[in-house]
Length: 354
Image (tube, rainbow, N blue to C red; front, side, top):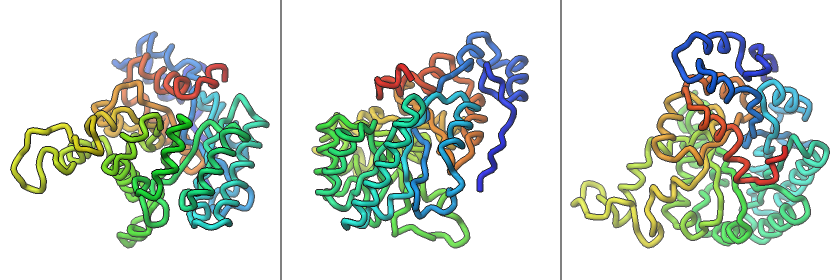
């Protein structure tokens, strides 16, 4: 069970008292009046926030209630959270009617939470990816009936990644609907308990996220569905650090396993006509449990600040694991505002009044 206590937070800054005092004397952006104003009532929008549906298999989070989320959101200056339920993934990915029903129950419960707290919650609905007909029906139902704000999928299903041709009809429909999809880390069956004694949450989640984005890139999903808006978890996982290698290994691009260098250095081929960096830079990246200076630094070398979003991974992670490390980046006030809220408002215009 996660500990619900947290450092005492100054209402006006959203920082712990210790960090607030440090910010007054430190030679950083947060020592300036502009920096402090950027933190004052940040009204953050959390795009990586979970709910636990009744009867879900994730017994480790059965203590969670909407009240827990709302209390922590108030403590950390979060005005609204996009809630999703990764706990439904295993059932929803089995390709059966039972999996479809699990996704539907989860989505209806999530929509109920939003209806009860319309200015505090939004919904990323689940999709039964391994049942194409069921997935298309759930997309229609979630958007037209439940009024979901977007969708959550896993970085992989049981044994496939999102770029697999099987999933293209689903992404084509999401593209047609100009939908937003949040990719949550999952561990493919290939890599479960890969290294004995090391939990999958240490590195495998982020490696699977990286495989997910690479599969969508190489197989042309990202380029053929340009109106599909994708949010990548954990500051892009390993994508920012590996982006150059990913680009250089595109078939027909710069080199091929010690082959002769070629003139095409943009990672361009028929499935990536605008190049690897173009496709990676148009994705959105949220910072849950990856707000340390090293992942944020790598991410900001890859993408413009317009693509940064705020997330916490609560209740799977304590909010402090993100919020306490954001000040270490010494981001300018305008980038703080963009990450905290403004970029999410562009993605979800209805949130401007939240």
